[in-house]
Image (cartoon, rainbow, N blue to C red; front, side, top):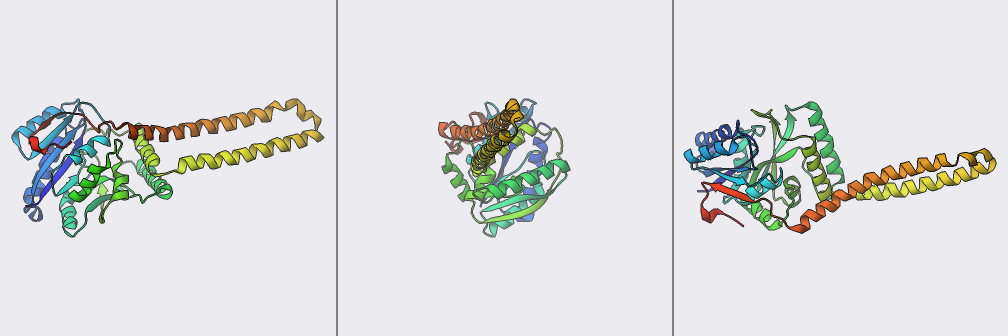
Length: 319
């Protein structure tokens, strides 16, 4: 019997963990196409402080098909789910958000396409009930990344989907301390099927994604899969150099015929200094993002550090 694991990352989701566990178990027990599979539900908690851990301990005590990993601290929105995926022993893994924005009802469709031979089945948002402004900004971001990326990028893909064990083995060999799953799927993915869905609003609780976390995700994808920032800095630097040279030459020639301009020579110089300085400051920070990204990758820190596991056999633990 093939085994399917449903991996659910969570952080401060006390109002959702029990409901999502019941929903996943319910779909496997009631859907005729899923009854031929064994399954488990695996949570990885990123150091919740709202009682989520206590709720998970209660769930795991009553339902052995539910497992949990507790991190010693919050290791970020990318490391924790990626680490959880690496720990799973299964034929296929489904990555699912805890807040019900990813529809549990798509699990049978994912499994069907997997049985048809697809190693990866991606859930793609073609509509969202979130803020129209936020959805529009995401669309622009995906278009820009797709245009400048050195590899294919998948628009409106958040990681929600099914992954065959062959692809999980690829992930285990990457040794990437700052994994960006969306880009990895596009870069190293096998035969893939995309399934469209409408993203719902959160069932309960408050989202932990803010402008800072969204910017972090954007910069990780930019520094991992594009060289557009560095190239733009080089091109703009060249253009500004030519512009300032022409400006200086034009001022000297004009001042030769209009001597009064020699008295206000400081004005164009100040303009040029502020212009070049502001551009340099921007691109110094931009290049710094690449440096930080490289530094994280060469230090080989662990993805997460575990505090404990629930309902996990000792032999299941992976390095």
